[in-house]
Amino acid sequence: MSSSPTGNTIRIKNKEGYNAMKEYIVMGRSNGTTRRGDPYCTLKLRNREEESTVAVWDVAPTDPPVVGQIVTFTNIQDNDGKRSARKMEMLPGIVADESHPLYSLLPHPIKREEWDRCMQQLMGYCHDEQLKAFIAEYAEILFKPYSQYPAATNIHHAFRGGLLNHTYQMLHMLEGLYPCLPYPVKVERCIIAILFHDYGKVYEYTKDGEPRDYKYLLGHIFISANRLYGKLKEKDIDEAEINHITHIVLAHHGELEYGSPVKPCSQEAVIVNLLDNLSAKTDVIEFTGNMESAFALGTHVVKEP
Image (cartoon, rainbow, N blue to C red):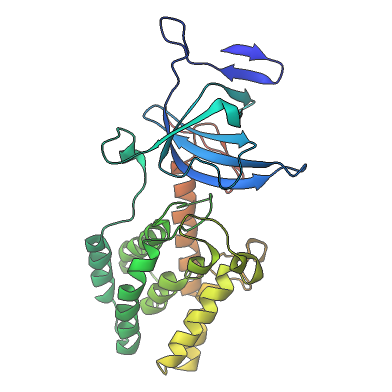
């Protein structure tokens, strides 16, 4: 490393003394604008040795790289753990396919057989035939769109199919948790609420994770709860049951300051809120580099060497 006025410039040199730049694959990307109005992007990067987050200045939203693309850098500035580079210091390469050694690091949507197996197990816990039929119908309908959309722009499960994986993780955890619960819980409510809790993200984001106006005009919690309420009404489900299920979706962020219109006030709502947090926060840790700050956690991530 050589010092610079603004921090440490990371230069990788081979034995001949020339720059031998590391290859990274882009795991996630978010776009932003500085206070002066200049565009930049924040890249989540990974290779076999490390994970890193790098802000790249003067990169417009339409400029490369995209998720799955290979990038190298001539220099990366490191200022107390905050890494950045200029556009001219970033060299976008090919979009990796299965033949590239870093391709396997990319997250991918789960396979259909995993989804079906989980849903079959959960259906075995259900006793309300009307809600059970609703679950079976929408487990089938939602698999395809969820496998094409991200769950977020850059916080958690921020890749195509991330919405499916996030939903599946919650359902899979419920699958193991429900038989252990010491208190009465109507599991059908939890299943339906998990299936629909982030339904609005299909409207909030493009398939590439770019925000749409729905995100700011309505937000995914309202969209999810509103659409679910309407679909349950169409099935002539009891009004009190609809209210309980819709409440879980409205409360799944847990706290008013986190965007929930209401706080969880039922066993089912508390369970879904905690499962949502568990899935999201463990994903944040998985894709944040060692000793890097994770905004969603309010702290730094520490990983075993």
